[in-house]
Every structure is written in structure tokens, then in C-alpha cells.
Length: 306
Image 1 (cartoon, rainbow, N blue to C red):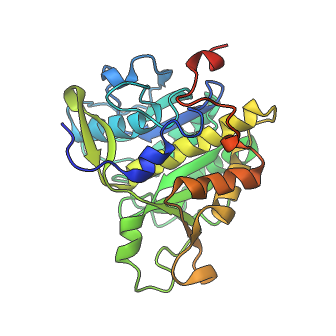
Image 2: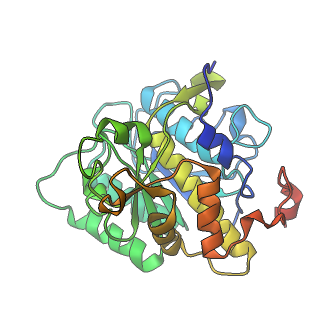
Image 3: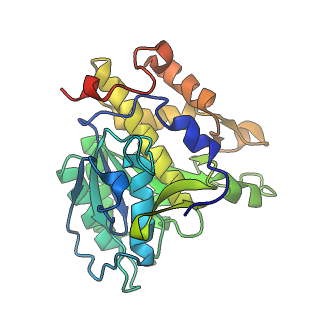
């Protein structure tokens, strides 16, 4: 059972911005997900086969995948309440329990698969990725497809992030996410992150654990899942305002206007986002008016069921 203080930023996002919309699809690329966990009861989750075998219900990669998915899709009034529980979810395992990690080609296939199944946002967790001296041409094609199809990729940063994705954080469609804790450890640098990125609190993020349990994790994967859920919420609000969802525009708004610069000011390319009010400022600038009171608290599930 989880112990300790829950992430304040996670609490700020829960139910605060409407819960999402089933017309918006978020793909989670991590380990397998234990969909029998009670927090997923009623969630719109579709598992996709990406060739990752050797799943174990209580293995490390399943624990990671279940935690990330629950941060987004955990249902209201369950043991884990996600930030975008009404959005549709695609579960695309890229890590298995055999310890072989994920090749860049396998990551590319997972991205292709998610886009083909209608993903607006793709959450790529950090883990054991194969290293390559040369850019993978198939991964480059997958990134190009995301640009053409207007799909945002939220990539976990830090020591286990996929370098090939993070190297693309200066351009669409990648939105790199680092934890505030990782950022603070690197503050002696003029630009601790060294790329355009969001930095958010990554400690004590509540999520699902094996065998129906609940845990708190402090990791970039949980932070990236929170941001992927946030992007899904903003896209849902665009739909409810009668506009077409624009994932790459949401990515750009977050990188330009979310939160504040680090201690070195505009010289730093990353943005620190730690409070609900800072998210609200981005929303207001986008003209989405989430704070106008049109969505009741807690949100009305029946209002979105049709």
C-alpha cells in the first residue's frame, strides 16, 4: 500500500480540467498493463500487440506500465484516479520482462501502430533502450508520420530516456519531460537540461501497482504520464469548444508559455511547471477558458457519454 505524501501537482490536475473526452486517444508506450486492476474498471483501454513477450503480472516492466497508464486513465472514485480518465487509451508494450530492452526499430513500430490506431498523443516512457551510433531511418519515418498526422510525442527524459527521441526535442512533434528533482541535481549548469523541455515535480506520483495495490513512484515516467494526460485534457477542451484537436499546437504552447524559466532566465530552454495556476495561464492564453465554470466539479460523466 502506498505511503507518504501524494504529489501536489498530480492533485492539482485531478478533475481540475474536465477529465478528458473519449474522442481523444492517448497511447502509452511502456511495459504491459495489468488491466485487471480495479482502477481501470470502466476505462476505455485497448491493448495492442507490439511483439513484446514474456509479460509477468508482477514483473518490473508491468509495474511500470500499470503505474503510467493509471496516472492517465485511472477511473474516478477508484483507488487511483487518473488525470484524463475519459480519454481513450492505447496500451502498446515496448518493454518486456526478458531484460532485452527496446530497440529503436521496435519503438518505431510502436509509434506507427499507435498513430494508425488513432492516437493524438503518444507517451513514451524511459527504460532500457538500445544505443545506436546512427539515427534509425525507420524511427525517423515514424517521427515524420507524427508531424504529418499532427500527433504529439511526450517523451520521458533523464538517465533512462530515449536519447534518439530527446535529441529531437527542439522540433515537433517531441515534448520532452524531466522531473524537477533531476533538474535540481543539475543546477550548476547554465542550462541544466540543455533542450526545450517541460520540468515538473516527479516525486510521490500515485499509481497502480501489481496485485491490485497502489504505490507512489518518483520517476520521469510518472511525470511524462502526467504531461501526456494534460495534453489530452487540453485537446479535449479544444473539441468541446468546437475546434479540431491540435496536438502540435498544444505542445508549442506548453513549451512557450507554461510555467516559468529556470533560475538563469531566458538563457534556459526548459520551462518549469509546478502549479495548477501555471497550467491555467496556458489555457487562458490558448483561449480555451477551462476556468469558466462550464465543467462542474467533480465533472459530470453523463455530460460526455453522448
